Length: 219
Image (cartoon, rainbow, N blue to C red; front, side, top):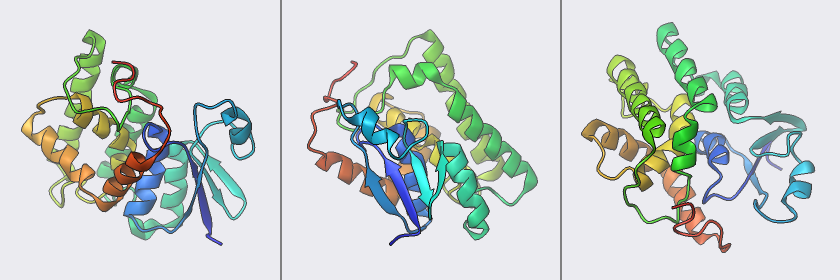
């Protein structure tokens, strides 16, 4: 039996589930995946059995329950300091935590205007004015992190960190809805999407047999 069980929802659209999943997969932290299908009449009851909030993701570590994506990533960082989920440099670590927390609590108009939907054909979809402000802020964050601390690799802080995991769902949205991206944005988006972990998530999302969401849902 695996030491960790990670409860997640549908890979096609469960953006919150993606974050700890891709971090654990990319950093080769072994875990057992347990799936709760979302958007069904049984979803609430099924989630209540495993989640104190009725939401996913939830990490079960030998009976210890950790919920909320950022809390799970912090917990894993404590358990596996050698994986460097946060950068070693104090300034880089402070920036990584700041931008990860900003992602956790912000960018509502981008989330709603560009809902995660890995079935949707790639094509540009304009955001409303506030969404465009938020989109620009996301790109500014990526540029700052890459410029100040990204010299050692293709990710925000060079190597893959919790900050990259936190932005992974938004990266899928930029790829799906963003149209022609600025070269530096495109390079970062492609770096994350090309990881084996993200490719595996996409492949499994494509195999999901359920109809929701449709290819053009919320267009």
